[in-house]
Structures are given as C-alpha cells and as structure tokens.
Length: 487
Image 1 (tube, rainbow, N blue to C red):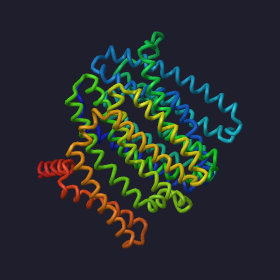
Image 2 (cartoon, rainbow, N blue to C red; image 1 turned 60 degrees about the vertical axis):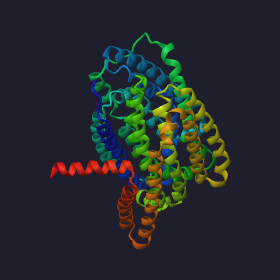
Image 3 (cartoon, helix red, strand yellow; image 1 turned 135 degrees about the horizontal axis):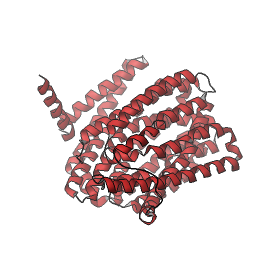
Image 4 (cartoon, one colour; image 1 turned 90 degrees about the horizontal axis):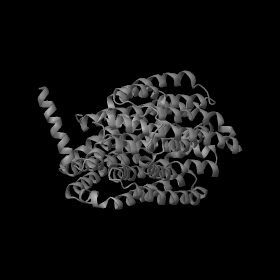
C-alpha cells in the first residue's frame, strides 16, 4: 500500500478538527444562553457518566487495533482476520457495558433525575462500536471521515436551532450531540468493507489479543480518573451550578486542545507501522518532526487563551458564565502538558509495546488526581478541579517522558528542539504584549479579540523567523515556493 502524505493527512485531520472547533463555536454560545446553568449541569453530568461505560465498551481496542493492524494493512487476508477478531471482542465488551449501565440506573436512586439524558447518551456505545473508526486510522484514510463530518455537523446545527429553543431542551441537545458525534458511524461500517472483510466470528484468538487490550484498557481507565472524575466528584460534592460553570471552562479547553491533538492523530499509525517494521531511522525522523511542530504550537495557543480568557468566555458562553474565567486560565496550563504526554504515550510507549509503563504512570496519576479533587474542591470548588487537572497532566507527562527517555531523550534535549522551545517562549512574550495593548486600545469586545488574535499570530511568526526557528523557516520556504509556482 502506498503511504499517504503525512502533510496531506494532517491537513485533512486539521480540517476535521477545525469542524469540531466550529461546531461548538456555533452551537455552544447559543445553547449556553438558551439552557439554564442547571440544565447544562445535568447535560454534562450525564455525558460524563456515560463516558465511563463508553470507556468499558471501547476496552482500549481502538489503540490496540491501530498499533497491531498497521503491521498487516498491506495483507488483506491477515488484516481482515485480525479486524474481525478485534471487532467481535468489541461487540462483547459493548454488551457488557450496556448491562452494567442499566444495573447502575436501577441501583443508584440519585441517578433517577438523569435517566433520560443518560439513556440518550448511551447510544454512543452502540454507534462507536459499529463505527470501527480505527480501520480508517490504520489505512490513514482521513478524506472519507472528513467529508462525513462536514455533512453531519451541518445537519446537526440545523437540528439544534430547530429543536433547542427553551431552558428545558437539554434532552434535545443531548440527542443532537450524539447524532453529530457518532450518528454517521453506521456509514463507517458499510464503507469499511472497501478495505477489509470485517464480521463477527466464532473463533477468536483470545490469548493473543486479550492481555495487551486489557493493559491498554486499564491505562485508559486510569486516564479517565483524572480526565472525567473531576466533573463527577464536583457534581457529587457541590451542585449542578458548579458543574455548569466548570463545564464551560472544560468545553473551551477541549476546543483548543482538539485542534492540536488532531495533528497528532495522523502520525500514530505511521509511527506504529515504522516501529513495528523496525525502521528506526524513519521512525526517529517522524517523531522528531512531531515533537518540534507541536512545541511551537502549544505554547502560543495556551498563552493566547490565558490572555483572552475573559473575551472567549463572553463570546462563547455569555455573562452568566463569567465565574468560569479563572478556572479556564488555570486549566489552560494543562493544555501544554497533555499534548506532550500524548506524544510520549501514544507515539512512543504504545508503539514500542510499553503499555505496562503507560498503565503504571496513568494509575499513579489517576489516584493522585482523585485525592487532589477531594482536597481542593471543598475550598476552591470548580477552580480546584482545574488545578488538580493541571497537576495531574504535568505528572503523567513527566512519568511518560521518563519511561520513554531512551527514545525521546535524544530528540527532546537536542539543540534543535531546545532552540525551537526558546524561540517559541520569546514569541509568547510578544503575544502577551500584543494582548495587553489591545485590551487598552479597544473597548469593543469583538474588535479587541480579532485584533489580539491576528496581531499575535503576526508577531509570533515574526519573532520565530528572527530567532531563526527551523520549523518557521521551513514553512516560510514552502510559502515562497507556492507563491513562485503561481506567479
């Protein structure tokens, strides 16, 4: 199979990430104003609660399938056998997840107020399993899922404005969220037949598949302890209002994080394939590109979001969510740590079959994060959940880096990477200055935000070029070549 261009894949996945950004940018300002803060709290609690069972249904299979399947993608018979066995395991785990979800709704009386929204969100379990999106990741086919995302996002926006009209329409919002996210996955199942013959099978090599799947699953559970437990604990210790305020900070944080993480996703199957085939030199080159590109993107994005946190909250959520500004400023620091943690884990530890180290690191971090939530929430409420997330992300990044030090060490501490980081920090100083000047110079919220963003991008790029940042110079050379080719 001919390898697709990582640049083209990054462009497509970047477009898909941009769609995931545009969708909440269009819908969330509207929804946050139409729904009550308590309604948003019910919506987010239900979404988070179902997320635990979605994790069980997924069982870490997507990560395992990409890592192992990338080695077989040029052999249709082997990849079809592998995929059918993995899909069968996925179906079984989904049925178990549904059974446990229904039992929990019967046992826990305090969930009765959330039953309707929980049941709506539970449709994600079925459609995510049928979606087999890991097939498209293995084959690096981002064009299909990008086109599909465009169509369903547009249709979902239309449905939102039709059905979400009052403070009590959070159930409609839940249904539309499910439709926008996984509603099209039945099409994935049909289209996947063009790659492989995937079906339910009676004979599955459980001994071969189950151990690595369960290790990756356990690691995913540990990640969830510090990603989703904050909302659950906050809801149990405080109230729906606190969850609603915190959910705005998390929503904005996730929008920004999604743009950068979309660039990482396209490299994972390529790195898994290269390492699986022992093409170490090529693997190191791609990994170096990933680390250096991310290093000059996450810092300015985080600094810019911190500087414009008030403006972003006002534009996206409105005045009644102003209490979320400080939470957003705190949790934005986690944006930097989480991206590098993802590189060390998904691009190094998992392809290198060091899932045991990944599990250990995330378990330690998850336990620490839960403990921090119980300590900080009584005193700091939703600000405490943000702070615990930052500490957890920094911890897991450090542990993953240490576990992968023999691979990433020569890259992270190379002169090129350090030079890129220092030039990026210098550029961030320019962003701070620009944002402060725009706050002084513009009374209009929209004009202040637009000029802050545009001028920050210009100043940051100029500083990188002045500092002779090799990534910035590479992009500048490509831009010059494109201009010359069109003249």
